[in-house]
Length: 136
Image (cartoon, rainbow, N blue to C red; front, side, top):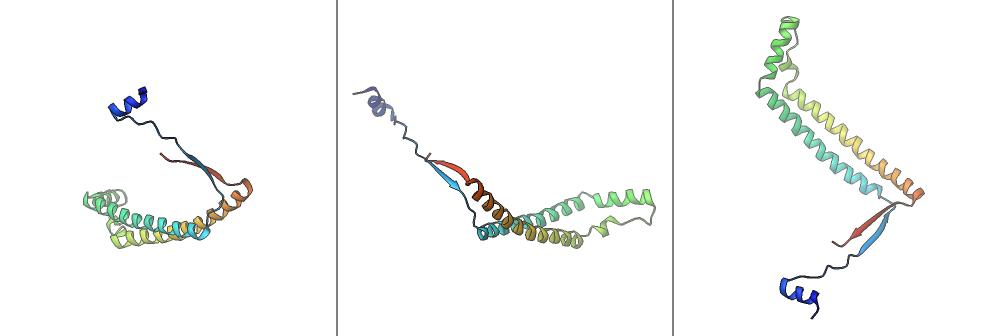
């Protein structure tokens, strides 16, 4: 019995499997798939934007930063200053966040399609991107 066979039987040792490596080239991205993926990614980012703006507004309101800023501005500009709490009310902040999210969704979706078209042109010129896969 060879040494490797004895190690296998006594210690549960197995010889390493040969790794198979496959090399493929990415030469084209379907534009419609890129647009759909871009839409879903930017939609999720839009929801995160809305939640983030709400959380920041809630935290800033709870720690009393609006009142501190109002007293600071009243001390600097007098009583005729700007009321930060009124200017940064929840409906105003959330409408800004919603507008920002909608613009992000529109631009992100359009740019995903444009980037896919640009990649397809470059892929035709250069032959694509080589990608290697193994069976680990």
